[in-house]
Length: 79
Image (cartoon, rainbow, N blue to C red; front, side):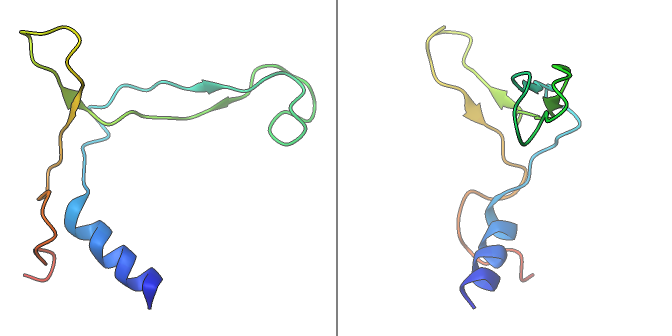
């Protein structure tokens, strides 16, 4: 029941456009026993960071994530 409710909440508050997000692959260390067992040194974990906006006024201002749905837990996925 908790897993189903968690999935229900997830569909209420999270959605971003991954097509616009920059791809930043994570490099795997050569010889990693799980991810690079043949020691090729070319393995990467695919990763896309969610798109965000930043105020142009302050350079050190934190990124603000863009959510295409609501940031409120309001049951909007029901209707």
